[in-house]
Image 1: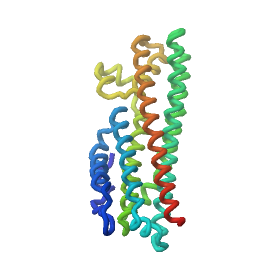
Image 2: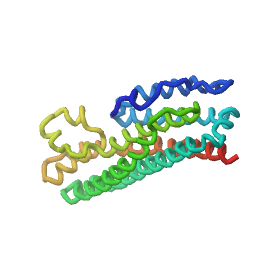
Image 3: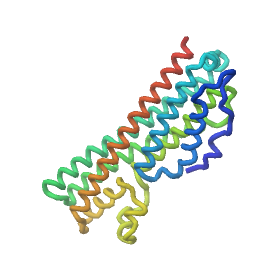
Image 4: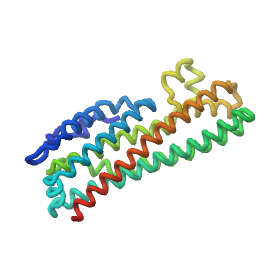
Length: 270
């Protein structure tokens, strides 16, 4: 992941004349999320980041309620800056939607796989069906990531309003976490997951996340290689728990994104 220093600017986030009591909390959460970006390598770390984003958006929403902030954002001369922020929020909502859809698709094919394992085990046909579903998920994710180029380009440069700077910094850290989430769900594009297992006994524990583990197991079954049913069942159960956990975090973040967007729209329309 790119260095946070190249994307986030060190700014004072003190608000005009009357600092809001949530500003120190906002700074602390933002710094924590920026410093932990590279650690988003497990479902628990990503869920923690999603929860941090929810807290960050709460602080942001509270700061937006200040009269001074609302007056600054509502000024006509700042319309273009606010429009960029609103455009960025739409991109984030689309990205959040792609994450929700990817998790839902994976959950449905994982539940079907679990059902097959309980009834009749897993053969090449069952494995192929699961892998076809995962291929569709990865295609959806790659499409969503390709659409991020405009958002990443539009966020370069300094902003003259403190609140706009805050909004854009939150946008960037939200973007980074969502990209980590989508990459986590998708897994590597080119490297053979089966090869990892065949060449390293510790690869499953050290390299693969829950999604990759099942992908690798199904690739092995599809190629008619031995795979322990009990082990697969346990891994599928772990994956189901991880999906539910991530779904909850993404849904909460989606609601927070909507809330901040509505607040901003209300400010500039008054």
